[in-house]
Length: 291
Image 1 (tube, rainbow, N blue to C red):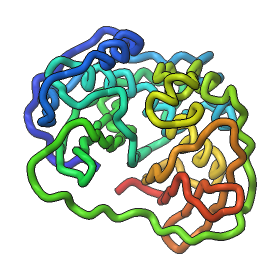
Image 2 (image 1 turned 90 degrees about the horizontal axis):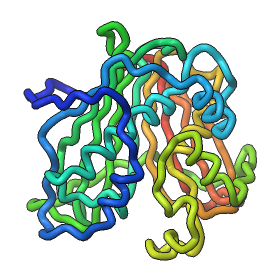
Image 3 (image 1 turned 90 degrees about the vertical axis):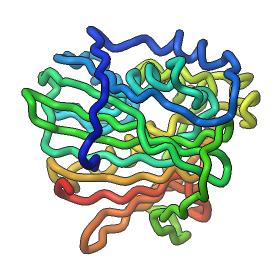
Image 4 (image 1 turned 180 degrees about the vertical axis):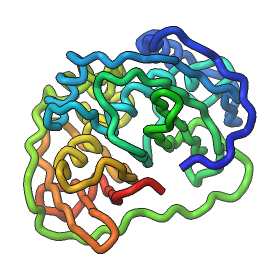
């Protein structure tokens, strides 16, 4: 996904940073409304995967327990590095309140649960949006020097701005229709996913926090919905694949949502929708093979 990388200073961490303090710092107002981001990368070498936590993650997202890990699990491993950079003093993009609008990731090959991973994240591509600014959080995972996974999470911040004219964004096509299946999302799903993902954002677990950001009750993590949609495609994708997701609308908890998958000549298209299939919450397109 990523092209030629500019030279960056690299910050080496010995372990995955905690996210609770970073979210607390993010609640402190920052001066200025011009977007800026750190120009360094942050990396962890030889990260050993927590098998008990992986099992819990697989259960809550409904993946089959197996030797190879889900693509979204590797995103979970890089997420603390995203938070570490966004909460840095060099960043003016507020961590709390930033909206995850899209995600791209590629599995270059199957990754074993027992493999040690080198995880690296940097921020790039600040650009204007009609409601603020967009920024890409770019992650990579290597095993024994081989690139095995990469991903780009695009966030929208309405609290900062970038000079210039916003560019149009293409969204995965959607046609309303009767869902192929229904998923019942219980009220405690956000808490269960939080235990596995370690994402402490309170809008997913606290009614008061959700209301503070304009939601009548907690919303499920977009990356849970992404993972659950991939889990529904198990057995239909090769070991190497790429996937693009648009997070169209948040899902309030509890809720029953619809799921639809359509095979085309080149991809598997997925929609997570309202129960009647009329309103999309997540749109996904998955393709076999690495780009």
